[in-house]
Structures are given as structure tokens and as C-alpha cells.
Length: 117
Image (cartoon, rainbow, N blue to C red; front, side, top):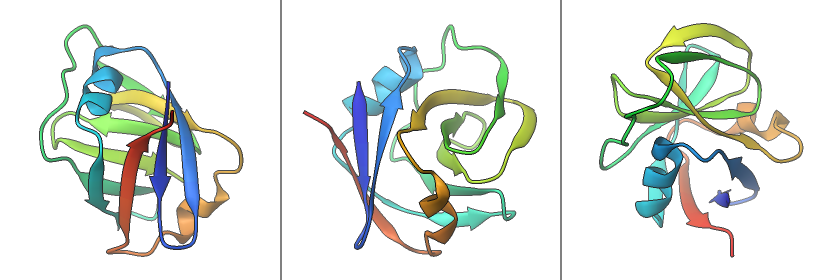
């Protein structure tokens, strides 16, 4: 399953995994999210509702291009730099193609998230 993040001048397609959190994210679509930079490593956005993480691993390593969910805070994150293992971090999917555009997403940028038909 794929979802698309659309900004004013770019779009990112993400191939999702098959876990409960990814399925729960799809159930919330379409979404409009406000992105912000977090520690020069990732772009994050708060979700309107928490995702179901029952049965998901307790944590994961994040790599460039990963879309994740940080369960303790209830937000999604795109990683534009590698990050080590984090408890509570759930893998949702991976950006298809070049992930370099992630770093250029401005603080406060509004993105629309939709299901790719």
C-alpha cells in the first residue's frame, strides 16, 4: 500500500508496511499535517489520533527515508539522517525514490497525506 505526502512544490510517495500502525494511519486519511524539524535529524508532525501499536516491535532503528511513528508522543516522523535504536519508535514505511527532499521541508510546511489509488 502506498500513501503520498504533497507539499506546495514536491511530493513523496511512501510504501507502507503491513503492521497495525500503518493500517491505522491509512484509516485516518486524508490528513493535513504541519511539519517541523526535530534535532536536525527528522521532520515530524502530530497526528489527530494515536495509532494502534498492539503487536508492533518495542522499537526500531531509523534510517534515511523511513517514515515512523513515535508512540510516546503520537507523531509521525520522516528521517533525513540515520538514527539509532529508539524504544517506542514504530516503522510505518519507506520513501520511494530519492529521500533528499526531506531535509528541505521547511518548519511549518503544510502537507496533505492521501492514499495512492
